[in-house]
Length: 260
Length: 358
Image (cartoon, rainbow over all chains, first blue to last red; front, side, top):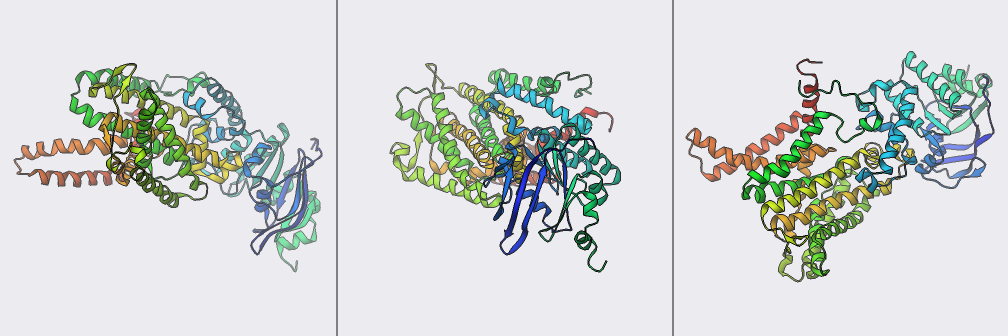
């Protein structure tokens, strides 16, 4: 691949996260470079989703430091991650079921809207202009994801694969510099997976978005990732290029069990 | 055939985002407004205004307020009647204690006071959800009614907290007849309903619905939960407060705290459940169903009884009326759990295709 991978933008150092007595993450360190596709893999319950929740501020680790663009990050709330241009999708689809596709994706741009509720009530001046301006951006996302035909459909009526795509659209609408994808291809058939891979690669390629990806499909992970980190029981057991990870003894043991 | 949007092409986003994108809807709304503003005052009798239309519009406004909170922002509330009481008593006090304050400003201040109280009782929503929140708002219901009875200052030292509202003077003209009061209520309700429609199609409304549908995802997107929920409480209470002020000034003329009881809160809640949660049309249809249907049955039942020569006493008629009313509520909820607004929407979708099935 000819793309240029930049400097480290997210550096996690010795992260530990506990829920009561349960150790979800223990002393994990890894970094993410600008413009790369960084995958996190591991068996079920390894702490992958917890890791993403730490990155975007839903969980607060008890120990460890997080550096975002070289600055140490203090305790933060989830909405602050959005302001720092980190967007994400969820393992279980977390769309707003009662709203149309268009409204869901429009919601992704909410941090960029400046008008207040009084202007909204009067539908006057800035509120109206903003609505039009952001609609244009949202239509670009809709074009990119090829979902023009369903823009007015309530998301609850869509099939699973399309819902996943809309959720990606909602994240993309925020024009994030970093995109966290939590199992974007779970439960999809081969065609849907291929589409999703294409979208992820295009996002990375065209917009230069850094992507942190959790995925169980090893074929996909090994194909599209620049670097892979492997977790097992909340510990890091491997980190490096896809080929290195594939041949790592610990990783093989975690996936296939001891004795192989 | 009549209701079809074929040929209505949208060439700009502005055209696609207007209030009523379908031409027939626009015509329908304008016709309805013309009838309400011009046709009804020409033909309706005094009884119609003071006993049917004015309370209907006021409860539509209150139901709209509750629908913003419960239907759009997903926060269940049982305190709507209490917020109406705050609006009524606040408007009364502003009118009483500030020399020469215009009545409309009093209504506005009544609404704003209710909004402030609404924010206060909305604070528990930051920690609790659903039925538990409903219980917290129930506290508002009892506390506010108790407060209004307990502190005589609020009702200008009248016995048991009864207030008699001041004259309605707008631009030096006193509104006395039911027709004039009706037009005042109608104007306020139309303006506020349009504002609500604008709110729910803007990013304010999207933030509310996002919090309602999936609050974790909403916060990850960058929606701050606390201001969003409290804004919903404030605006909802503002609507209820204005409705309360109108209820006191334009409908009854004299109210007591116990008039704003839990029963009334439930009535408003039933309106939005039957009409449609999360729909402005739903508030309208729900208020119509709950308020107008009993009146209609009152008129129809003796008529049919007379037609078949059945010797119904008036007591029997009122029992049967309650029976039929309850049965109709269940019937509509079973046919369409999402309310009358959804039925209306389905009808419109069918009409677009009619006479073809697809």
